[in-house]
Image 1 (tube, rainbow, N blue to C red):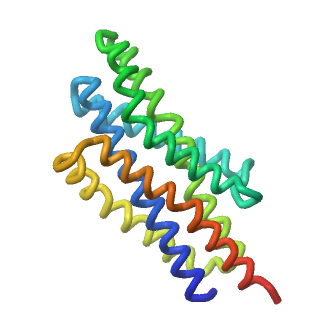
Image 2 (image 1 turned 90 degrees about the vertical axis):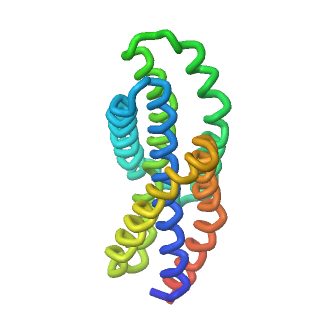
Length: 196
């Protein structure tokens, strides 16, 4: 495995680690305000994100992003969804502001589930590329991703406090939007390294 692929692979897993946690923290903070209690926000937010991300990961094995422009389309769709979320979600919240807890939980899941399903494609796609080239650095990429997630958790809270929750979501969107062109370069480098 070349140093170029190691570097690009590390960057990929850093971006999805940062992006995931920025989005998760931002969504939980957003719905905690709407649901009226941080416990509800954590319970519904974590449940929705973990379940929907798992579904996205499952779907990634049936719908590979490694052919054609799929990965670029995925990164663009996820990034644009996250960029637009702070604009349309408050409007939806206003429509159901007086609803009961179950209604408000369902409204919260309308923001969480699509983002979770789309984010679920990121990690398996990266592992698919890595394992096709050389499976030995897989533990390193797991560690890089985990470290990025831990770093992003605290950073996301600081961004929300000193800027806005919307800014936190936009930081997550930026991480995913960077995956499109960066991932294309990584795939090309991987293809070159596999040539006899």
